[in-house]
Length: 475
Image (tube, rainbow, N blue to C red; front, top):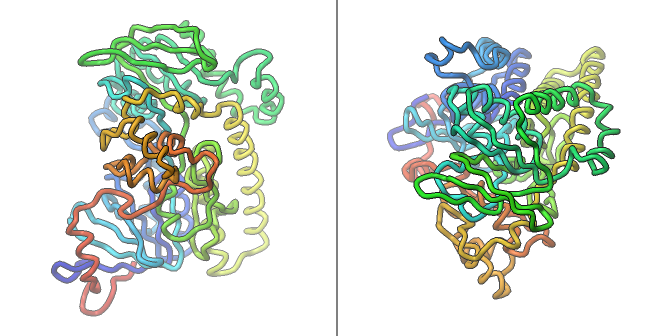
């Protein structure tokens, strides 16, 4: 796949899958097994995504494979005949074509496919607070990664805070590697008698497997005497070379409680990574409370753009089982369009849809029980940085919004908040809230490049050429 000097290589396939996590691998596997030419593009060194990421060989030799089912799935994808291109960053689009950077070969790549399956996952939602820039303040996802992948605790005395059931397995993983979890601080009250947890508990009984999993985490924390505190958020982190003390308050104000720590893991659920699908023109809606962009897609991931599918957490955060089902259903729709569908295939597709809908129903319940407290951004002190990449304080964003430029696009351009390396992946919720857009339908814009790439790669797109004199390379 060598393009002309200084130009762009072109690759054509029946199906292009962006993202090699659980959903992307399922889609690629079943499309390839049906005889379609499939290419998988993933920015990491190996398939797996965040959930099925593999341990370093040295760690694996001592502690074993973290999730063997993920390793088996990745091996099946490679054996299926799908072309797997890792260390390939998809950074933009040109019409229906995907624009990628081959990091190993340091060259530009244009991928053209009849069907595009996007499985780009989700980001952790973070909300700023005084002290969130201190060393030792991390997201729960990073704490989980260090504990499970590297068998290293992020600290010896760790406070878990934020909202969502994800905090519970993270706390258990930290206990397993020897950390002391001083508390789990939950912004909502899903476990409180008489609260919404009880009302939701009736609905939760319809999902016994998920309920048992949640109960197992809570029981383990109880055995280790880890308090689970509800209706409480982080108000401030204090320290010097590292975070040393965390002050929490009740969500309604007051009730200060402090913890001596050397690490704080705080996060408020997840936001789908929708940028690429939006650039490809799919219809979306905006969550009026958080500003999150939601892709309008069917059970099989089909979007408003023919041939474009959004699968996995991108289509709605619902866990690994739902992600894999979405990838499989997308593949079934693609192969049915290419070769038709038997009656048995139709029955299987309907069975998988019913299972997916049960998982999505549980995810919807979880969303109601663990709402992110985005309103805490409203009282953020002016001097606290909202955007850490560009060092933009909350006061700067508020000042621009007060001029009447309270459209999030204008506030972003006027303040430079959200224009740094992460492209608002971290500050997006807070920026949207501070911009006064909570009553607006305008989301944060999706712009290229959606991932950082060398400027030479972008420049090469103006000098596109075929992979070889005979024409574009086929998978």
